[in-house]
Image (cartoon, rainbow, N blue to C red; front, side):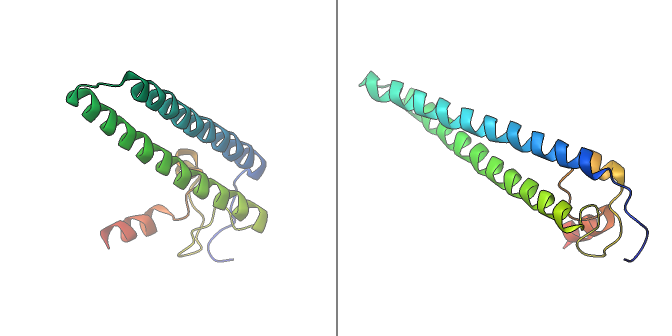
Length: 123
């Protein structure tokens, strides 16, 4: 391995990731269920004011965006759990240096160290 050894508590991180995945999954289900409930109400209302209809459309689009973001997060969490199993968790996918513990505290599914992430964002 390049750089230093990774000193991440993998059991703690795995439990944290599993918990985060469950919370995000629950929130996504709530969004879907709320969307179903509101669409049932609006279809039962018959005549609807144009403003109400527009507000409902915006809310539905927001819910779809939130659901899509939740799906992406769950995918990132699943990938992090797979890296734990593979023994590569906590190492930067680009430079193979250890990802600092503080970054993993903030973003436990991080794939890149801070310098590599900054470089990626700059293009």
